[in-house]
Structures are given as structure tokens and as C-alpha cells.
Length: 160
Image 1 (spheres, rainbow, N blue to C red):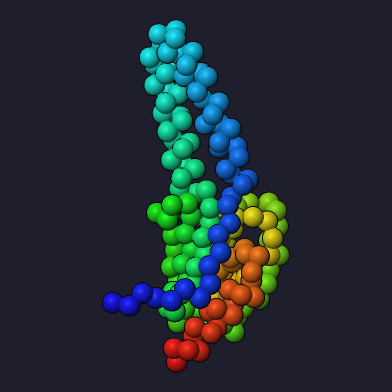
Image 2: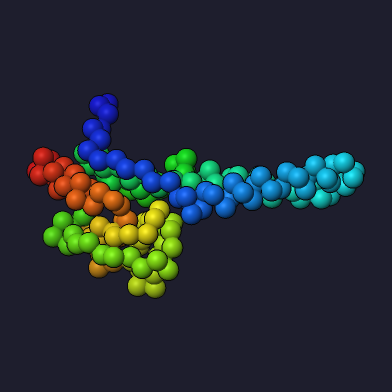
């Protein structure tokens, strides 16, 4: 089987998440050491669990990766366990537009009460579109909106 050609890729680190998580993980170690020296295994175990939970969360969400190949738009977080794929043939290219995303929408994978979906690693403007079988909007915050849009359109025109 042939490997799909990558037409677009972008990675954005969630610095708004990474920095506090690293500070929190590092700050658990002095407490862990004090608990071990004081021979308090319950506190030591709790600190290990806290550090492990924070580290696992960090691995799952430390970056947003957007990739377009010849048939699929894939959006994944962290090490790639959490991801969403859209078939390019399902994207309605006539609905592309740019939308400024307010700061209070935050970062991550968000649904609103209308069923719209936001994928964001930073504040900014999203490339917004709809799928052919849905009225819900898909919003992807990226610095390279035009390149993402062009990659999707070019792939669809090359596979007609």
C-alpha cells in the first residue's frame, strides 16, 4: 500500500498549558522528598499520583498537529492518541471563511451548544467550514489558514 502524500502540516505547542503543567509537576518533587524523608508514604504516594496524572495529561495535550494528506484532514493532540479525522470529500469548500475566535473560547477541542467544533492551540483566527452532511461549523485556529485551505482544495481537484 502506498503512503499518502502530505500536502499540509502544522504543529503548535500549547504553551498556555505546557508551562503551568511543567511548573506543577516540578513543584510536586520537593513535597515528595519531604514526605519520603519524614517517612510519610501516604503523602509520597499522593504526590506521585499527582505528578503522574499531570505528566500523562501533558503528554496527551502538549501540542496541536494539523495534517492534510491526499484524502484526509487529521487534527491530533499531544502524542496522537486524541485525534479527529475528516474525509476531504466530506468538506464543503464553498463554506470556507475566516472567523476571529474570542480569547475566552480557550484552547483545545471544544464543542458549543449548537454542535460547532473548535480546534485551537492559541488565540487567533480560525479557518471555518462545514461538512456536506452537516450544518455545524468546524473551526481550526491556524497561522496558515490559506495554506490549509489551498491544500484541501488542491487535493479535492486532483482526485476528481
